[in-house]
Length: 160
Image 1 (cartoon, one colour):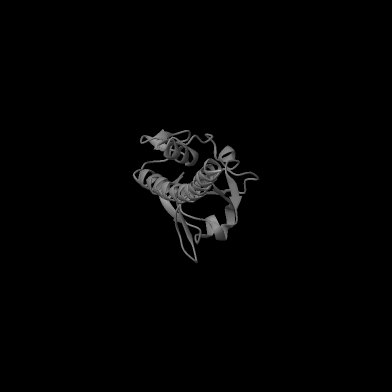
Image 2: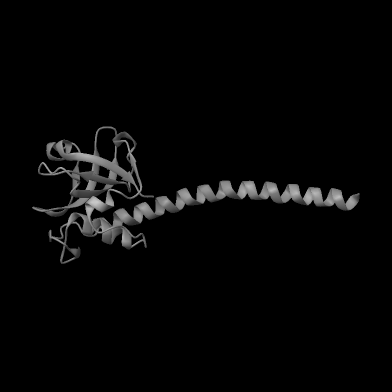
């Protein structure tokens, strides 16, 4: 009888330890994601001023999806190479739920499909700022307050 009671007590201890460790693990994951997001933004920001280059994925020049592809690769996160394909990864979320580290997609120049992507660097109540490679200015930070991006916004995807 004593053995059964001891075994039951041990089972209860192990079960309760397991449930609390999953809570810790969720907090750890959030902390890890925040760290990864900050690294992604820092990595992308180190390229501000680099010129635009179609198909570019280096400091010699980036296109928009090349910047995102290379930035995520720095954290060992594999994304497709094109903005159209990147828009299929993660989950699409409402613009009002956007956070730092999410990807923001556009259909520019009256395109019928997604053809531009940026990495969200800042969110406040009235605007979202994102880093991307512009064909005319290279790697820059832009805002959803700019009419060009207001008119061409397509979606936001959460990868992390």
